Structures are given as structure tokens and as C-alpha cells.
Image 1 (cartoon, rainbow, N blue to C red):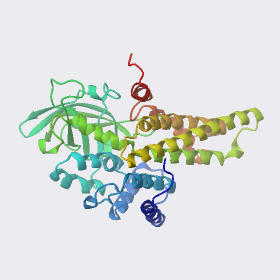
Image 2 (cartoon, helix red, strand yellow):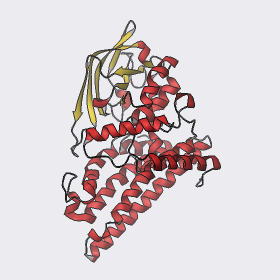
Image 3 (cartoon, helix red, strand yellow):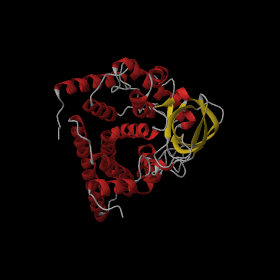
Image 4 (cartoon, rainbow, N blue to C red):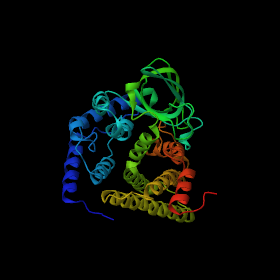
Length: 386
């Protein structure tokens, strides 16, 4: 496992750290609309200096950054506590997939606007009956001449109500089953027949949507990859989705350190203090395991090896620690920890109550805990399927 930056990587880190210090946009306001526009401007600032997507080729606004440099990029973003770019799903997941599978015309039409947050993208994969079992999706796209007619429903589509385009996985061969006969379409979210219904979460936010598609016409020229080859294209997108494991570990450590700085608010009972200390020591150990697992995955990738089984292990660890950390915070802060962000007496602006509610999704999104365990049991440990 490599811990030290190579000379070129150290130079990359220093340059980006300096850029962040000079251009940090500051803390985001509570108003979601205002925060969204600040994040959009922040992404455009990054794009203008080649920092919005450093892993992209230079001809498309990137820096041809290596895998290790992409990890450094994510580390420095997390350490500086800068806002996440407004078009993260597009830039981090979909853009690299279009670079790999898209036509020259699609790259010209989509990538620059995506990079500069002029066109926001969402990812339409999950359905009410096809979440972890993604290959069971039912959304249909029937070809009629030079267009597909799309009918179906997607759910848990992040920021769909703000998106201009959807990277839609659908079934173009109605006789096919499972992962065969699927295609990827870049759907115009403003087209006739597209309806978004935001889903109100228990945290009070509405960052996910149900998306209904009724006789939506999509030009064949907006298909990414070959017809019926959508599963392979989709797997490319999901691979790019796993880049943030290192960032998650840093963010968890920052939260844990912030909680430990509030020690004066912890229980005064000696037994309760000892139990809480044990809980926090366990969390600290697990956060460190996340960091080391991510570094081992990166080391393998830089040497041309598959980062396996580190990727599913990292996701499994991150999702459970993300839930256990706010639970520990509520144990430490008592009733005050339950105060939400609109309460002026809430510690840390209501972060802990918000995290407790929001973290319920971490064991579901990007592959449920049950699926991760099955994958590890079968493919890493060699246990029988039945």
C-alpha cells in the first residue's frame, strides 16, 4: 500500500490546495435555492480553471489526471470542506461514460455544457421493482423510425426535478430479460411526457424524485452506446460512481472530530462516559479501516489491478459507519442532539439530527447492504449461492 505522494502527485496536490485556498466559496446558506446557485457558480469557477473534472482529457476541459491524482483531488476537496459541485452526477458518473461510449457528436453536444453546469444531469436507473436487482427494470423504449418512444417509471432519481437531461437505462428489446436488450438514452427532461414528483424525505428535504415517462420521444442520435448494449454502458457508470470512497472516509473523520470537540456537552455520569468512549473508539477504528481500505484499492488500481474486493468492502463500511456516527452523537448530546436545523438552540446548526435522518439511505443507495454482503460472500469468500 502506498502512503506517500509521488513527486508529480505532490505537485498536483500543492497546486490544487493553493487554488482552493484562493477561491473557496465559503459556507452554503440554509436556503436550498440560494445554495444551489452558489454551487453552480462554484462549479463554473472550477471548470474555468480546469478543476471541475481533472480526470477528463484536456481537450474536454480536464487535466488527464491519473487515478492517484483523482484521489488527491477528492481528498483536498473534503479537507477544504468546499461544496460539492452542482452537477456531480453528470461530471463524475455520466461524463466519463460518454467519453468512453459516446459519439463525437454527443461529446460536442453534452460535455462542455455539463462541465460548466449549463446542463444538469440525473441518472435514471432504479425503478419501483428494480433497485438492487437493476436488470429487472421494466421501462420500455420502442423504436419508431429515427426515435424511441419511452414509457415507464424511475424512482430515487437524485435531483431529477432540477435536471435538463437524464441518463436513462431502459429496455429496447421488449422480448429480452434481465441484462440483455437494454440501452442508454440521454433523455431531454423538458420533453413532452416527462413528469417529476419530488419525494419528501424524513429529513424534510426533497433531493430524490419519481420520474414518469409517457410516450416520450427520444432521437436515436441520443442513444449512448450500441442498441441493446446498455448493460455494459451502465456498468461503466456504476464503476465511476465508486470514486468517492476516500472522500467519505475523510468526511466521517471530520464529523467524528467535531463531535469529540463538544466533549463538555457529554453526559456527566461516569458509566455513561465510559460507554460513550468505547463507542467512539470503535467508530474511530472503523473510520481508519475505511481510509486504509480505500488506499489499498487505489494502490491496486494504479498498478493496473482490479480494486477487488476493496470497493464493496469500502461501501459496506461507509454506509454502516454513516449511520452509527450520528447515533453516537445523539447518545453524547442527549435531547439537544435531536434539535433540527431550524431550531436556534440546535448544536452545530442541527447537523446531528439531520445526519441521523439522512443516513437511513446510506445502506440502500448505490447497492444495499444485503447486496454488498451477498457479493462479498459469493465472489470474495467463495461461499455457495444457496
